[in-house]
Image 1 (cartoon, rainbow, N blue to C red):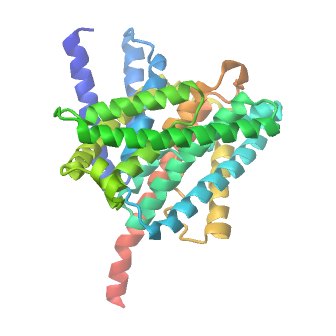
Image 2: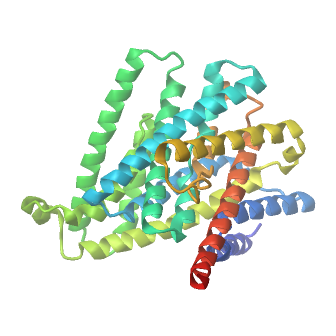
Image 3: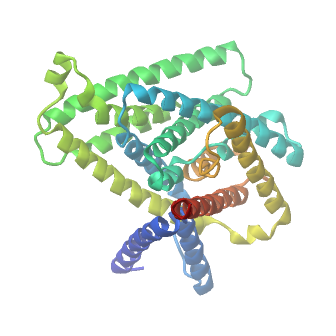
Length: 400
């Protein structure tokens, strides 16, 4: 494959992704589904013509990690904090935590019933199926009201962070005791301290840079900090969320010494540029990740009835837990919150980061593909129904 052919293919994929985003805005079909279908179609064409291709599974975790960092950072940069937001932040945190734990135990029992493996193995394999993907949820919430959109951004971001914390904790502690929780507390304290220091240093650096290239440097430093933290098995996604929130709300801090040291005349302009660049970079990473994920899937596994039934059972448990939590605990509108629990980028990342010795053969990439695709389709249908109802309600009022 020549250089120009490669460039034509890559630019064509980006154009397709842009068109898919436009289609998603009109039809409420998540662009994730269209990207997955595109990846599957490319794989079928490659196999049909016998074209030799690179093993894309090698780069999938890297694409996913970059996409996760940029998407969470972009979502955090969109949030403005005020005291009246404390209630929605608290609600989103407890929603993410409660649904994560309940879903993890529920899916664990499903996997254990089907595979007869140990509780520990089933639990660690269940975790990737329990995280709400911010990569899908945040773009899907763009058409909702401000309060609902902020709740989805906070909830999905908290879900990402809490799931990563739980995953790292379980993988490293096959036997859980008081020492395990002490170590976890120390690690979380360390990562919060690192988040505060990183925020201050990066904000100070932004104000002192005189070169016209700033945003890419900040994003590169953010990726560096995240990667260093993750290499030590720390939940560095906390730093990403904290930095985005801090940068977008720093001008609300009224301490004279802080404003003198960190806030400068073009601060708001630089933050807007940083947001724009992170949004476009996240779009690019999300595009290639889901196309590659679709390409690497073996669609013939969908002929496996056992696999389909297992995927169906997991999907049913996901929405049952969500339904019960909304009805019994949060007591809010059922739609569209019920359907905005997609699985996606981070689920795939956690699966590929699971050590081979802990993987259960029956709980593989094929099952993950079914759950990711299933939640995306249900999300699409739910948003379409919600949109249709919201369009018909005004006309009913007018008739009355």
